Image 1 (cartoon, rainbow, N blue to C red):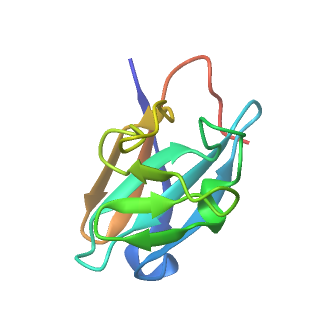
Image 2: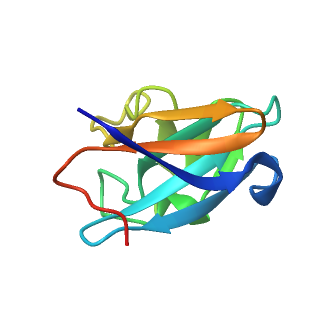
Image 3: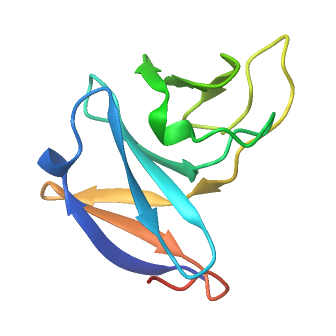
Length: 109
């Protein structure tokens, strides 16, 4: 079961950019696409643990800044030929406010 916490306004995250939300146990990258879609992934590339929040956002993809792996923002899956998956977190936008769904094991800081 998720506990929804308000984390930001839509305008707090630049288009084609990201912000990092820190919890007690994990850092979560929250991305905004050019079409104002919002996604949340663990801020760690499945390849060599590069900070996805520092990558380049294009379409519904982020490119890892370390080795150019492309990660699908909706699924967290690496795009072929690479393989791996970044953990996804539920996210919703209500009246331009962004909410992140955290389970009981991930408490907000």
